Image 1 (cartoon, rainbow, N blue to C red):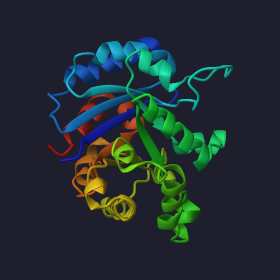
Image 2: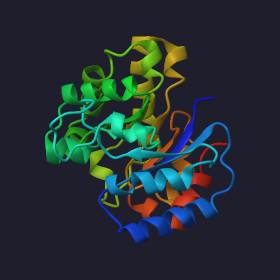
Image 3: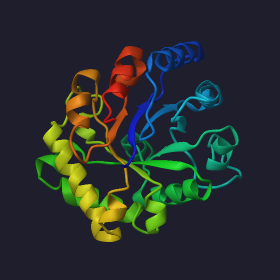
Image 4: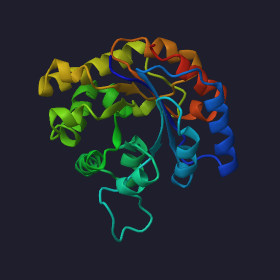
Length: 254
């Protein structure tokens, strides 16, 4: 069975004291994570080493960088590489979040470079895709997301694509309080999996975890995660509240 994943995206939030308190509260309140489940904390870069130390020894619990630059090293002031995060025990990285695409003009081609660099360093990329409201309103969401997948992921081999986690995030549902219905989430997740199957075959497609990201909270997680092609969530605001994120973790399929 493919991994069921609860991934927290803290974005640019929390002081170091608040971060440590939140990590301790979530880790202390989470029941044992089963073998087909994962918990991931995508924390601000200054907290990566702290978070890696906190989760060390915790079953199926990991830390992710919120961004990486697609070079091993060099004169790229302010950036961090997959090599650097790997050296401090971080094994995941978020790639292509809608905020990176919108505010920092990251293209599908640039994100393809990031994904490749992650895989070269044995970092699991959590690749984000999804449409804005105008795309959804004109019923072009399927072709839009399909283009994102094709231009950023479909140069990967069958072995490589199975190392990628995909996070579908309808941009109109991020931080707005709006949420795609569980049926809307399932529809897009099924579409993404069908595109993977068309490219790589059904067996490979069924091994790729696809997360939903967009105003996931404790009150709706069970329903959304219960859909057959939804393998957990990339959680924003609710992951900053310990009891909310613990409940979301517990809503994962067992």
